[in-house]
Amino acid sequence: MRRSNARAEAMSSYSFTDTRYRYESKQTGEQPLTRVEGRFTCRYAYGRAAETVKLSEQGQDFMAFSMNDQTCCFVLCDGVGLSYRGDVAARFLGQRLMSWLTAADQPSGAALEKRLKELTAEAEGEINRLEVDDGTPELLRDVLREKQRMGSESMYICGRIELPGRFQRKGRLWLAWQGDSRVRLWRHHQEVTAELGDRFRTTERWSTRTGPIGGKPHEYECRLDQGAGYRLQLYSDGLNDLDPLTELIPDEQVQVLFNARHTDGLEDDASFLEIVW
Amino acid sequence: MNYTIQASQRTPALIIYLIDISASMNMLMEDRRRIDIVYDALSLAIRQMVFRSTKGNRLTPRYRIAILAYSDDVYDLLNGIKGIDEIAAIGSLPDLTPKRFSDSAKAFLQAERILQAEIPNMQDCPAPLVCHMTDGVATGDDPEPIARRIMSMSVPDGNVLVENIFISDHLLDQPIAEPRRWKGILPDTDLKDEHARKLMNMSSVLPESYREMLVEADYQLSPGALMMLPGTCQELVSIGFQMSAATPVR
Image (cartoon, rainbow over all chains, first blue to last red; front, side, top):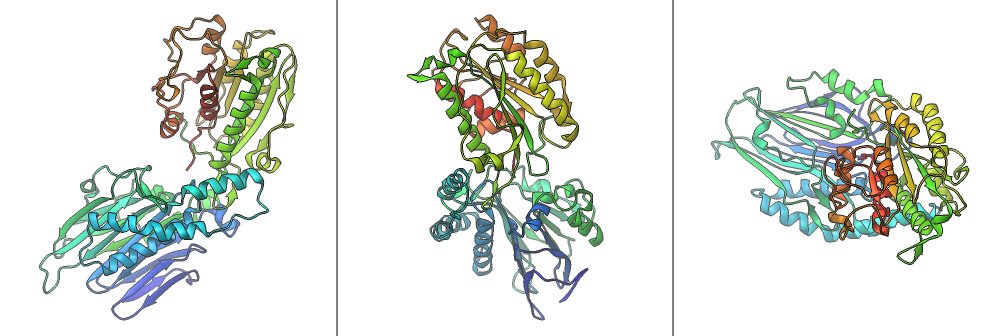
């Protein structure tokens, strides 16, 4: 595999072997657009809102993926800013979903829903251990403690791509999500995102206290043909400038969106992952 | 012009409260003084704004607020516009003490002056909102022409919104049994009280984005409802103040 990016990478975690690559965003820094090429070609980038950078705070998005010659697993979580410490829910959920996706024999909506409920016990413990600073003004402290009781929330998209192989004539794409982060799919270089349905809702997410909110996880599955020119794109709503664009966007232009010089930096946290195979 | 710009640190919402502190606010409603119910409802709205302004453990100033209490004069309770973070740092609102008359025109005039000074710097912000709470007939000049002028002021997000909370038992034919199921006052709703009809003319249509926020909070106001609440019980007064803080946020 080959990896390249525009600038030195400081604030991410990745590991690299001849056949395997893993990336996990750190929430404390930016990731310039980076390209990794193997049987899958991945482009990814991560940026925090200008306000968050200025105050050296954690981004509320979390993104991770891993890939080898046969399989690519990925997750993108967008912590809900109005919930208590959305950054914590996003990271917790993202890391657990990556472990689950990598280990699962055959991910499915039912298995995911069960997992999302199981995670709440551990997640709630983590949230309850967080302290609200005693120096915080009383009204704010009360509100934060109320939010803490209500839990932390995150939207998510996760999935797995299995390429056609020796024992599996056709490959498989499996996706699941709750919330309004974007996931778009191209086949034979034509956008076919409509196949996912109109099922991206702001009111749906995962909560550390109750698990899935607003209904069950949405699921999409399809068989994959050889050489059908697939492209899968995931991004958080901080990059909604991408919504009208259907053509492949050059690396430099994706980076321009992250730099957001016209607004003195990003107005919201932004994550971008594109997988081509 | 669709009231969809989100309140953020860069683009904060401006809300101006006009609170009637005439002598009649000493009268009782559900065994409490009207003024105390209003104070609690306003405090709850401030708390709601704090709730909607936290990110991580930090309070981002997504709202800017002015509170003008009026009787025969206007009293600027916060000494100008304050950020929600500054109000949270103070901890509680200044006391509301009833006085004598109810010159709402003076209060609307002061709100108009604030808006004239602020609007040139608010072109990327949510449309400002003026929330007026009263329990009776205005004793000074007619406030309607001033309110209409305010409603014609605008930013790209939309015209300035004017909301009225009218504490009165004589507004509607039927009492509102279930405030959460209530559909609101519509432009063709027949109001029994002449002053209520005047306030109706001074009330903006509830923007859809605000209505969606209220639906999320389990209030069932109809599309096209006016930003006018009959304060016949504590819950309706509270809904009125919550409505004022329903600017979209993420």
